[in-house]
Amino acid sequence: MKEHDVCEVTCVDSEKTAHVQEQLEKSREIAGVAKLFKALSDETRMKIAYALTVEDELCVCDVANIVGATTATASHHLRHLKSLGLAKYRKEGKLVYYSLDDDHVKQIIHIAFAHQKEVIGRE
Image (cartoon, rainbow, N blue to C red; front, side, top):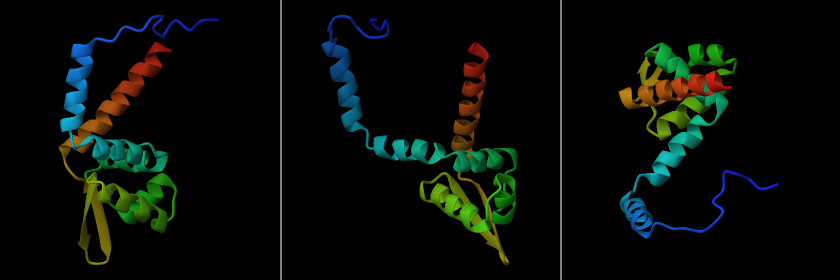
């Protein structure tokens, strides 16, 4: 049985493909953006990121409680999000509080959830 979602003949638009390839070659952000999505592809990190859209700031202990993990595991995931520029932290006495790095990260999370709701609605 043939698939209907694949071209049946080869027909390359040289102008479009050259333009896109040129843009990709200029872009230094591709690898970083891929790492961002890879980080968010982990369910626990996605839960953490979402939690940080609901509350602007959470301590590591709160995050661990929310995602049902140890503080060591939550801290590991939070450090990973921080290393990719998705989260930031501040220390207050013996507590460490994390928040999303900026509004762009919050927007990415909100858009992803809105899209998922649309996908579910189509089913």
